[in-house]
Amino acid sequence: MPTHTRTHRPQTSARAPERRRPKTLAAVLTALLVAAIGLALSLTALSRHAAAASAPAPATPADSMATVVTVNGQPIPVREFELFLAQDRAATFQHFQQKYDDNDGANFWTTPYGGQTPTQYLEHQAVADATSATVQLQLARTYGLAADIGYPAFLKSLAAENTQRREDVKSGKPIYGPEQYTETTYFLYEQSTLATELTTTLTSRNVIPVTDAALRAYYAAHASDYQTTSTSKSVVAGPQSAPGLESFDQVKSEVEQDYATYAYDAFVARQAAAATVRIDQRELSSIDVS
Image 1 (cartoon, rainbow, N blue to C red):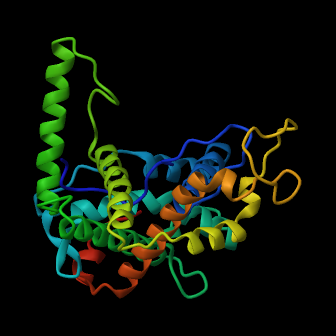
Image 2 (image 1 turned 120 degrees about the vertical axis):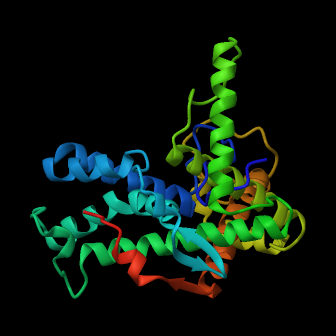
């Protein structure tokens, strides 16, 4: 299986089309990114930054494997860290554009706003995301889902995957997904895959307990997420909690999936908050984000 993975992932539950989907942390972050890109398409200034954020990882020099951040002793090289910078770039620009009405001047990235430059803000966000991703990789290693979690192993896996895809295309075999992954898209794919596997593993081993009491409490706090717009009567037995609101028993399986994702996100956040993070300021300052 792949040995380098990502944090965010697609929704893992399928729901009836008339029911509003609960918004997990991953869904909220995805929505924010989509909004940032949509705004970028309508404004000339935003367009340049959205393009940079969605572009493949830049070609990097030989020293790109120099360590810029370590998380619990796990090195994150410049080349990997640049993926997080690119991922957070559009949202950073939108943050300063909306909060400070910046006009994207020539000195945008080095101009202080409220005591912080956009470069510093972006670096902070990228370090936070890199920390979250790395603690998940470390959990994967602990629970037998990954062996070598270093970035060189990821690059080796990417090369092997693309070689196999080229061979499959040449021989006429069907492939799923793109004909070739970029470094960025494969990184995101692996993050998504591992997060889903970790959620299943940690809940099944009771590392993240999923009790009936916890499920009912989650349902009570998010009951409005299980509303239905259908006017027809439900075929599932059990009383309705309120008009247009499906009862806990009717949606228990969905609540279990949603709660598992919610609890996993919270668990990872706690792991990331407790992680020992060290930043090589010299390497960090050598990365051009403009």
